[in-house]
Length: 192
Image (cartoon, rainbow, N blue to C red; front, side, top):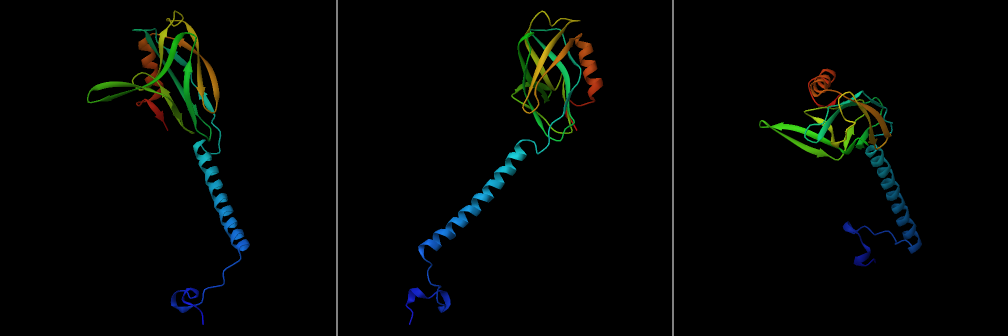
């Protein structure tokens, strides 16, 4: 008669224990199955993090800047992504200024605040506008080449599309603001 430990719930005998080698093989199959699932999840996560399987196709519009006021100047430009993959603007630089910063101006309770942005998403199928009163590129301590009627080069650094150097025309501030809003519609930032 079987002992108490040999019976499962309900009095049904338990199957004979497997040998240690069989148990190890079964355990390894289970571990391998879990590793395959984890690997598939990692690949899917990386695909999502990289903007999907598609590639970005960036088109950068004509760029304009205003003559400096109070030690800075704004650059107006649009970046259109006609590709099937996202991209990210990582920053910009120019030999015509001590630095270039990306800022976002927001108005709340009648008060405007400007915050520096570390990166800017350039989603697939969308256009991102850089212009006064919203998302903009600010030249910090621009030099004498940033004067009305002049031009200078600006390099935009993208995560997936690499560096893109564009010419920037310096125009009167009122022309800059007027052209920016004529070309872009009513809202600063991303237009879908």
